[in-house]
Length: 69
Image (tube, rainbow, N blue to C red; front, side):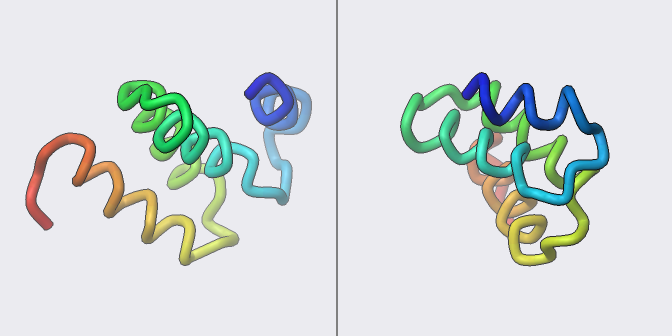
């Protein structure tokens, strides 16, 4: 987790999906919904270069927040 966080802290314009990867670790491995949603939102905001990740992030936020599509 620290590596991903440091990656975008050191380079706000990083062209790797560090925020999205952090979100999936928080979500699926660490079961921390709040941190996952936070990172998915960051991925949506900063990682538009990967449209499939952005779509997944939107869907997963809805699921984690208990909202229907």
